[in-house]
Image (cartoon, rainbow, N blue to C red; front, side, top):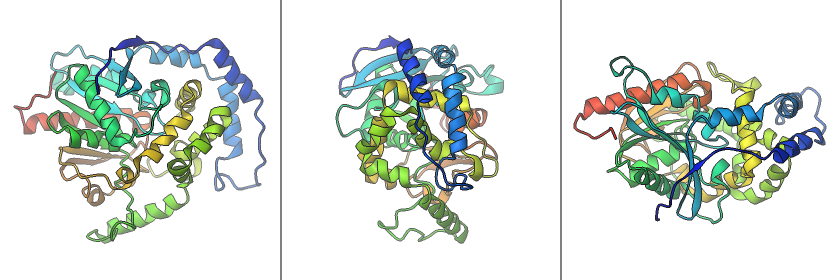
Length: 393
């Protein structure tokens, strides 16, 4: 897949689109709600109404535009797909290339707080490695625009990301990702082992659940691990509706998400952004500003429906990906329930495994300092283990 030219990009949503969003929000036709059910039937109406009102009358999209436009952004085309990405170079001559991949329903903006810390940590002897940071928007997500063909699964995205890094002049680099990024990043290491020095993941999709249709799911696990997996399965049973729909009928869902901003906001809130009554110990909430920034990006780019197609495209690569042997670090934040012995079924060379006392599934938003610290420590660990490896640009 030939790498096309790179063009600078600036976020600039036309004013009439901002006005249309505000008008639609104010004209929402609200459904009823059973008394006293809270979040047990879905998103609580009081929470959604308050956030929608703030979206229309208090949230300043232009401030978010200016904030995100502080980082150099670009557009290119890879494998027939428009790709949007952030590329920030460190002033440090020994900076290590780092590719970050977000998940769903996240956007590249999840990493915005982390970028300055990664690029300029201060003196090397006290703060450790610095990074050249590359953050693409997944195909079908945000400013990468809708996908225009089928087949954009995890492996195809991994090949596109490798092409992007090669086009930017990086032959050796570290990859990091959470949620769907925890599938894409290991896939890059598996498909391009000569280029990927190490894989860092959080919010592992395949580190807490098993597919009982494929094998005896609890064979070889300790009783504690088996209990943790069973608990996760019970909780997932009550939350998996969104994934089942996106994995089977994403086009049906797209009509609602693309036409109603409150419907889109409710869909995002009902995932793991919320969320009120089921926070794990140490789990922190995602701010309203960050939730509405993500919702606004999906709304203005009309990619809520196309992003949902990612679940339909992946099949077995979602639940049972091929094993990896690249040096891997796993960061576990509250609420994610990753089980190491289960993670090791797919990642055969886990060299770092860290559990954190605060944060959450969206660690880039909930505990950016801890995520940056762990990425930097993993890079230092790789350099110490193999000083001869080329881990700088």
